[in-house]
Image 1: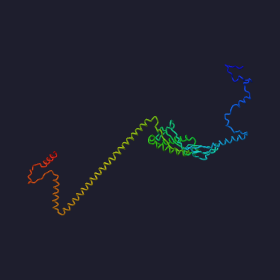
Image 2: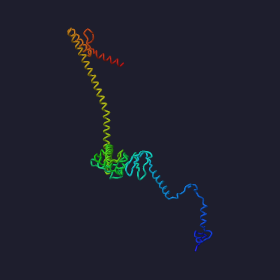
Image 3: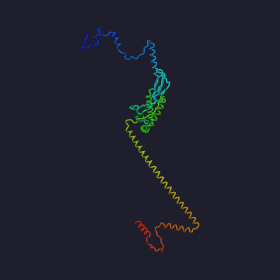
Length: 351
């Protein structure tokens, strides 16, 4: 029994009824012809082959064309193309569009040879960062290693998991290097030396693996003593800083005073040299004068005696503060002539 609810009829209401509402097969064919074709020109002129062999060959031709086209590839400027034939290297290609035999005969690997890669060691891991120094102290150290692919063939065929190998090798070389240097040098002026030594040793080690990797830089990021004793080490660093500051001040004072002392010494030497030359000249003049007097004395001894006597008396009285007069001059003998002259001179100066 069929029910109609609220006047609604379902799609099963007319099942089994051969009424006029049900379309007949002939009506279905007619209705299909009534719908227009939405793509009238899409397959115009195309006829499906009646022979199955022709159809299969066409499909295979399309597949072969797509397979051959898949051999085209492009090498970017920062890459090199490594062509492998059944897994064996055959050639290396450079930038541009290239072609190789499609897979699985040949395949192409394109490693980036100019891209700088970086590995961080000792960041967030005490197992990696804590290292033993040459004087049996412990230092908390982290560093980075930058590298690039130098030889793509060696890099692809001689090593596997390149980053793990480089990281392990770098950590090993760093521990070996730090283990030969005292902690004072590690914390201060020895950092640049450690970077250079580690880079050189790490490159030698990777070359022995024939890894095709070039280490471009090793950079120490953090070099600190362990957290438990860091304050004591900082106090030592401050003392060393004060020591360096005092040494620099002393050196500056040395550089300032030394030229001054050298100048004063040169001045004293110049004055002494001038005094010496003056004395020598005076002595030579007196010697020549004495030789001249001796020659004159040989000619007339009496005359020279009188001359020498007069010159001597003249030199003596030239500096004496006495006035010599004879009895016929009429000067009182008790008059202080030098004192009068001095008083007269002072009176003139006061005016």
